[in-house]
Amino acid sequence: MSSCAEKNARYRERYPDRAKAAQKAWRAKNPDKVKARNDYYNRKRTKEEHSQYMREWRKRQPDLAKNTDLKKRFGITLGQYQEKLEAQGGVCAACGSKPGKRSLAVDHDHSTGMIRDLLCDSCNTSLGLLVESKARLLALIEYLDKWGAQDE
Image (cartoon, rainbow, N blue to C red):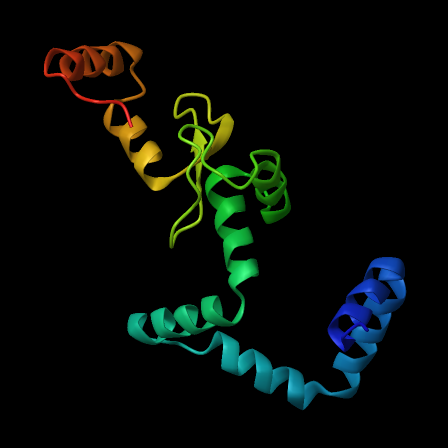
């Protein structure tokens, strides 16, 4: 069973012109409600009030917040992130571990911006600290071998 919001969204997708016309008619019929809503959302807020509002909004709309962040930072949607996560079997592309409290990070080439895979926090942080250098990674492996470090 679909919610009203889902039905309304499907209607807007199927009939965008009708939906816009209905919205325009509603706004013309209810100018006081439109003004009250605009006044509320456009009122001057202190930085702390705005931060509090955004924290509450993120709690109410976690998927929308995640989608917004992914688009802004990496140019991908939440759907594309989930497709990549599913293709990786829900685990880190490097070490194969499942995500902990935080979701897997989007790994990307900092020079080109190209999205690579999804990594756990440990692998993503390690890669960043190594400045994505194979030479540094190999040097660290040699160092661990020198001191007899064991593989897991």
